[in-house]
Image 1 (cartoon, helix red, strand yellow):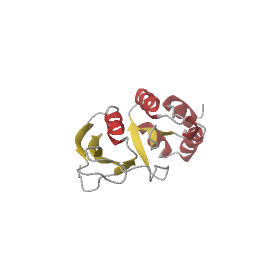
Image 2 (spheres, helix red, strand yellow):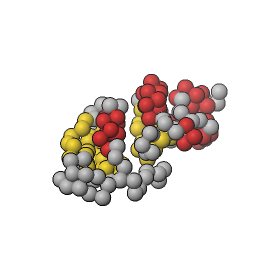
Image 3 (tube, rainbow, N blue to C red):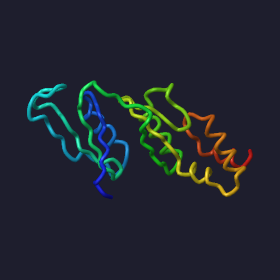
Image 4 (cartoon, rainbow, N blue to C red):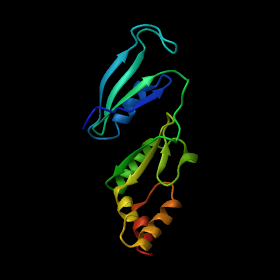
Length: 159
């Protein structure tokens, strides 16, 4: 994997807390470095955590304590492709902090970032060569908050 493009997540002051939380959720994840401010800056003091570089499922990220000036929104989300229902359930439980934001596999976490918790099987169902199966799976998904693989399969099968 290349580190040429690294997403930078803006936080008020929770960058280290959030990075620790995120890396606890997925394999091949770790905190790489924690950089402290060498001097005072508009939203912090010398010695405060400024930047946290971390790896999440093999992808490099930066978390920046930039102050209260910007907040995340749904225009950018992070999609986690899940192998099975147990993984969907575990990640949903861990990440969903704003129930009113839940729709079609989307959740919003306690820091305001949006995540798509998607079973890999969902994409296969949507790409089914039988358009009627794909349509039934799609319609079932549209009525769900957390995606349920068995329900999606049953809908695709016409049950």
